[in-house]
Image 1 (cartoon, helix red, strand yellow):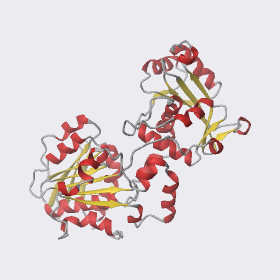
Image 2: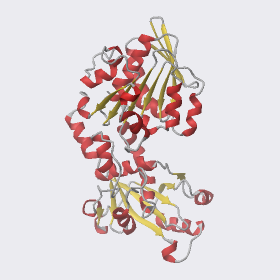
Image 3: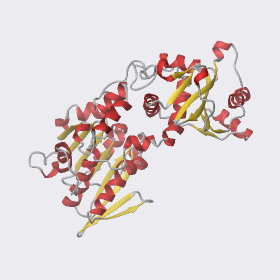
Image 4: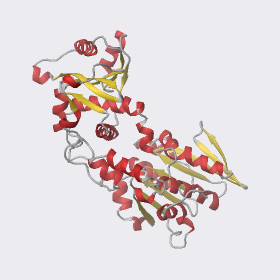
Length: 420
């Protein structure tokens, strides 16, 4: 089915378990482990092959955290592969489904995003012969359970893949720790299980991640986040003395974390030769100063930080509606609310620092101070302590909302091209 691709032993198992005497009576398969280990590609090939071999005129569900990420991570590559094998694949964008036909067999594959608790209602009422979950650990349990409850057709099966998260995650506790109780086949992947990965690429991933992200994404271990968040940061490597900072920059961006009782933090970022420097910052702590400032006063500070530079955009705390409106009314700067995915943002910041793409002027004392204090809250899963995090947040907004997409880092990370 996979043409000229060479599959590893575990990839073949993820693809063909449903026709193997030893495993075909399982109701489900679970594949977890390192990123880029080939689990999603081989499993998705197997899912479509199983559906088109064992059923006709049936409905199936393919689920991701969002439909957009599902298409990028799984479907674009998968559909191209099956079209190359002679299958007719007709995508209905408005209906969020794909009809696949081959030699008189036709089945419909509905696409669902399971991003929050309300997503469970989207799949209610549908009868399906099987379901495929991409990144199941990122979905709410209510959506997952509603989807598997829809699998009421005889001989239906459940296909699950994910990267490791916190070991308190519901999927780990209820499925991965005890797959026998679910009559599920469990397959754990490492990067060595993907024959298409060169040693050079494996080494790149070894270098890209530190701390909890290294353990989860590279080693494939379900592990809790603890200790200092940006353990990768060191002043010796990433802080530049003022007299050694670049004299000119290609573009400028300002990021902002809004605070009234809490500190208000802004960072001025400049790009030079493929690297972004935090040139200067504004940090106002009302408790320390003994007085508060209005939005107009913070806007004046924004103008002083910008100076006469051509600022491409202001990336602002999404909760700061009044300040965003204040900036918009002035009509001087383009302002956008930041993307506020905390864990993804932290992972991206850590990666860019380690690659030497984020550097900091020695004049930026507050962000340097916060680096040493910013830590995980060990009483909450994958959550930073809500203190010493204001410059950390404005930096994360910049990376999450601008730098990751300028560098196309998001596409690199999920690896939608040639994923196998």
